[in-house]
Image (cartoon, rainbow, N blue to C red; front, side, top):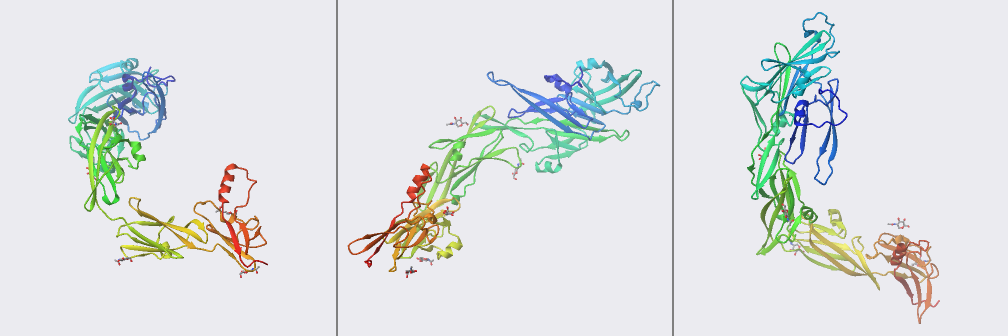
Length: 621
Ligand SMILES: *[C@@H]1O[C@H](CO)[C@@H](O)[C@H](O)[C@H]1NC(C)=O
Ligand SMILES: *[C@@H]1O[C@H](CO)[C@@H](O)[C@H](O)[C@H]1NC(C)=O
Ligand SMILES: *[C@@H]1O[C@H](CO)[C@@H](O)[C@H](O)[C@H]1NC(C)=O
Ligand SMILES: *[C@@H]1O[C@H](CO)[C@@H](O)[C@H](O)[C@H]1NC(C)=O
Ligand SMILES: *[C@@H]1O[C@H](CO)[C@@H](O)[C@H](O)[C@H]1NC(C)=O
């Protein structure tokens, strides 16, 4: 027996073993288990009273069908700031740990004193004396059987007692009722005996003198206390800690009755007291953990409408909720969407923890243009209406809760922009009547920046803007090649930068006269190949005449320009009645060494370039 043995096989921690060995457990509102272990618990591996490692095997019971799950958790804590006496008051046990003095201080009448040898050198704990206040003497074995924990560490003696035993008694200390455990422990070695006294007192209620406050067993600073709006008043008889219901550090447990939302708040403040006795200079540290849970109180739910009509999105905030509430679905008059479906639809459902409390809110955004929003156009404005019901669940009980909201927003109607346009033989001319609304303009694939505007002669007089886009501008796409002209098009899109929706989109196409082939009297010919919108992957620099060694003289991402003569580059001749017809062809060179099928089909598409004909009428020579 005894708590100092190391166990190789797992030991089940029953409630009585927990209080004997320094363990306590609580379950939070989500069903999570929180296990607290004393540093000096029976199973800790203690390295010179500086480092303590505790390994726990946790068995989670599954449903009838499932197998139990096993987890192992190991935690190592460093602790060096030992007071002469350390007391831990948890809800199921009290623990006192005292520094062992040099043995000669305590040796009972016996003259064979070994000089200043530490007590662990062969000393055994044999007897415990409890003062209740009457003396009760107990063999170590009997004390262990009665649920006490007794251990010897390199420099300390640890005694642990369940919260109430026949050997504890209640005493008022400075008006505060305390549970007191008062003991002497006798160590023996041959003819030597050593006695160490250890006394623990735990308040039945909070009291005494404060040094530190903590939450869930961990100290917090005064700055953290202020941020969490905790307050602390120390009077001559009481320490009063005020924690706002819902403050950070605790948690809310939710409950639903008749579709009404209730919450209770649980917080576990810790008070840590430390004092040094004037006469003996011994110091004592108390840690008192004091869990508090409020009854369930109605928590009215609020919908905060943060819609800015000009952004054309409803934005609403629903809350506050405990963290144990999940949003499952949203019911609109026409359909029910799960949260995942809402996000796919662009409703942007978010969960946000409150910065200064332990509650959270849900945030939802629904664009005015979504079909779940009802629209009504009246004289001069449009009314947008959103009606929705949130489907929520409280975990882990899976208790359903619903909350309905109605939102309305009004937007003054603005006439859509009007576009006027035309072409001459060189330029596109665009005039847009926009009526002072804010917008972004795209020309082709480019944003109309001030730089690009300067190139395109951009002018805006407040209600209208105009552009002049040359036929040769990179934002003009070529749609088709006709006899002696090229069909070019510009696309202009106006967007609302806030909603990123299109306000207006228009395209204008014009034929521009262009001589694609020219024949000179000396037999030189030129040809211009243009890249059409339908063949975006065409690399014009790879085009050739019939003779694949005849590439373009010049090429860019839109054109290739060729120069050749009647008897080069595979040019053929045909004699017609009174003219001579020179023919050549521009295509991608045959890459028959590439046998991949997809390559083949791509190449065929790309090689559908027109045949350029040069008709020369004075060509009898
Ligand atoms: C959180 O802060 C807000 C505003 O800053 C305040 O109205 C609210 O009372 C605070 N809540 C808590 C629990 O302190
Ligand atoms: C929506 O979620 C709630 C949970 O709060 C559930 O009771 C309800 O059946 C769900 N509705 C649909 C149509 O899935
Ligand atoms: C702006 O220009 C348009 C078109 O040229 C013209 O009709 C309109 O009157 C002008 N508006 C102002 C305020 O000058
Ligand atoms: C043929 O005439 C064109 C136009 O005058 C000239 O640019 C070109 O250099 C001439 N070619 C030859 C081979 O003389
Ligand atoms: C076009 O082809 C030339 C020659 O094969 C190559 O150098 C160039 O990188 C290609 N351009 C593109 C945009 O693929």
